[in-house]
Amino acid sequence: MTTDELISLLRSATEDDVIKALAGASITTPLADPSDLLEFYQSVVDVLLGTRAGTEAANRLRIPPGFGSTD
Figure 1 (tube, rainbow, N blue to C red):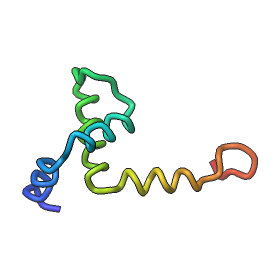
Figure 2 (figure 1 turned 30 degrees about the vertical axis):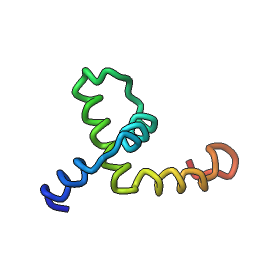
Figure 3 (figure 1 turned 90 degrees about the vertical axis):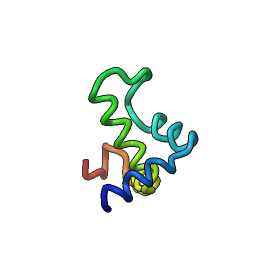
Figure 4 (figure 1 turned 180 degrees about the vertical axis):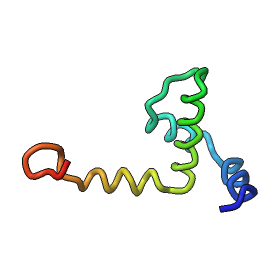
């Protein structure tokens, strides 16, 4: 993905995309810490690319830690 494509993708973000990104990230608002800003940015990109949904679906199929788990 080129820089222009990424910028276009970020500009297409909706309020719902931002809410999904905040819900799935371990950050709190206001975003004052640089690490929180970076995690928020990465979360928004994951939501927009659809990778968050794939990861969440895969996690639901995993065996929970404990007996029979590979974790």
